[in-house]
Image (cartoon, rainbow, N blue to C red; front, side, top):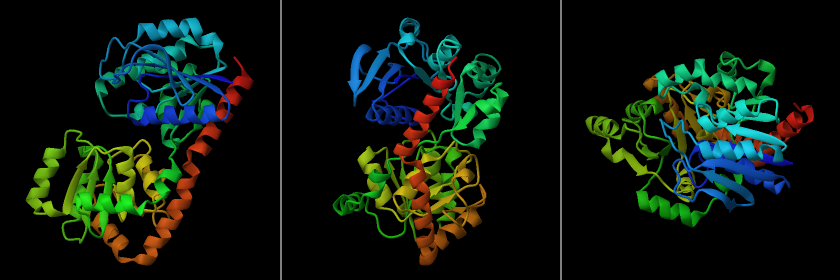
Length: 377
């Protein structure tokens, strides 16, 4: 099968959507499919034009002429698509509220089978005024796709608001490299612990430092607990506020800001910790929860967004009501004080994470492509 993936940005750009498109494409190539990625140089310093190749993936990277909060605009990419679309059996467009994939959905309507994946942008609260206008106008073109994929059932309502019929929506979650997070290298772990001076009862958070991630409540919860909070991720505009709060609580020695780390160091962070926390106000999926489970960490979470689709309280993790610091504190203390509970949650979480291996996700994608190609236009 000849497959075209369309995304505003792509490897080596680091991001959730970019990672998903890369892993799906690599997996499809391994299965014998021909995969081309049409993208732009948005956030990328790589050369533009055709001729790039990575892990067997053909990359056509065109100039992005307009940024507009990530929305993007690339006449060159659109011109290439008009000229080359007929060479492919199926097209997969990635990213809601992004110009190139949405243009492709509209242009390819009734020309070639099209799959559309929103990647969480469909329910984002960022750039809210622009997004509301977009939802009522251009965004409705996604209903022209043959299949729209959702990270969880949570996305169904958002798609339906855009006019997508329910029978055209399929759940397609993100994946995790289970082996990468499972394999422990004791020497790497030792070096990581030494670098960041980690002791016992390390509570890990991975993600942006942003108010919506609920770290302010985690800081309050750990004040009187024998634990160290390790924060891995770049500042999303909230670090100074959080540092001031930590200073006011007098717990500066209990919180470590590791900053943005390489993929290898992020894995080491998981494997050097004793528990994981994601206490967000909202999550479109929460892939870090699956990564933590794959790395044999018990997970504590909030009860917001898509998280309840991943965490079953008391079975594969512990869930606390968002903003309820007391409940969060109790759950942290449970994890560090009840070895039997820890063992149970780790075992169940590990088993649950295996449902999200990239191999299984790629198989799901392949089945979707075969289905839309068979149904035809």
